[in-house]
Structures are given as structure tokens and as C-alpha cells.
Length: 158
Image 1 (cartoon, rainbow, N blue to C red):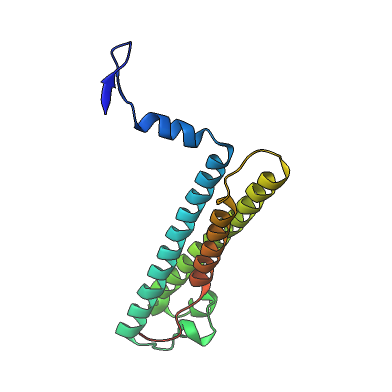
Image 2 (cartoon, one colour):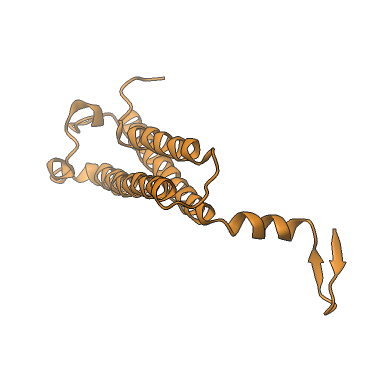
């Protein structure tokens, strides 16, 4: 509900105390940061999957034509640079490696942040909610799943 305050400014009376109460806690900033890192990891996952699907679509449309398929173990773009037709595949594979490397960085940052928040909650003597440990585990295991899915190349056809 919007009501005017003493200065004549309109404020939301029920929303503002909630955000001030929650964001005023020490653990809220940590969970907000971990949540943002998790969102970035999810973006890295989506972009790497997009690169894989683009490469598979290109190879399905044009055939291997001497190119090594990404599932055959050859993933180095240097081996393809001699083939002029493979320039697109080289760029796609470099894009995949770029997003996968950033996914690794996000995963490490999430795990270290979760460990730091957990250690701070246990040894600092400040009050923390009982569900904080479960939330940190959910972020850790969820990020591990996305990290695994980012680096795993699709081997089975759907």
C-alpha cells in the first residue's frame, strides 16, 4: 500500500520493512552474491550448449568433410586450421572453450563463497538461520551439476 510520509513522498509501507529486514542480515549479502554467481554460471552453461548445438548442426548439414567430430576426442582447433572450410567450426569450438573456461571460474567462486559463508556462520558466533547450510549445499551441488553439464560434450543423439 502506498501512503505519503511526513515529507510528502510516497512510500510502500509493507514492502520496505521486508527488504530492510532481510537485507540487513549478514548472510543475505553472501547469498545474494552466490545467487548472482550461480546466474552467471547458468548463462555460461546455456552459451556453451548453444555452441555445441551450432557445431553439431553445421557438421550435420555439411558433413564431416575431413573434420574430426567433437566426440571423437579431437577438440583442438589447431588441427583444423589448415582446412579453409572449417573456419566456422574453429570459431565455434573456441567460443565453447571460452564459455567453459568462464564456467570453471564461476564454479570455483561459488564453492569458495559457500565455504566462506558457512565457516563464517559456524565460527563467528553471530546468529544465522537454520536453513542457511541447506541453501549453501543447494548452491554447491547445483553449481557442480551445471559445471559438469557445461564441460560434458553430448555423446548420445536425442
